[in-house]
Length: 196
Image (cartoon, rainbow, N blue to C red; front, side):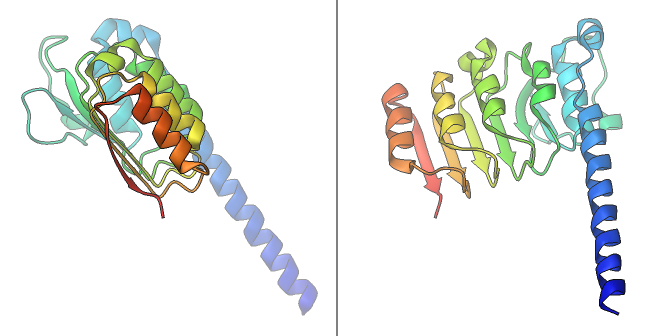
C-alpha cells in the first residue's frame, strides 16, 4: 500500500512539474519580441499588445480607464495612443520582453505586483531605459519574490522617480542600506515601505 501511495505521489508531482514547464514555455512565447512588428505599428501599440498578451493592463494618455482586453485596444493612426501607465499585476511579463519598453516616451507609472517572473535583471533593464529615466515618476514593486536589494538599488537611475512603494519583498536583506543608497541618489524620492 505504501508503494502504491508513493507511486501516486510521484506521478502527481511529475504531472504538476510538466504543467509548470508548459506554462513557463507559453509565457516565454508571450514575451518574445517581434522587432518588425514594433517598426510597423510603433512602440506604444507593440508594447500594449505585449503587456495585454501577458495579462497586464495599460492606460493611454487622455484616458481614465485601463485597457486589458487585447481585442479592445483603440485603433486609429499609428502613434496616436501613447502609454501613460502600466499595471502588470499578476502578469507573466519577464525580462525577455522588456525590449518592448525601449521606445515608450510617456510612461509615468508602473505597477509590478505579484509578478512571478520579475527579478533584479528586470529592474536593472527597466531603469537603464533612457526614456523611462525621463518620464517615470511613480512605481510600485509588491510581492515579487525574486527581487533583492540589487534590483531595488538599480532604480536609482530613474532620475524623475518621485514615489516608490515597496512591499512584501522577502529578497531584501539589507533594508536600511538599500534605502539610504536610493535616497542619496534620488533626494526627492518619497519611499513607502511595508517589508515586515
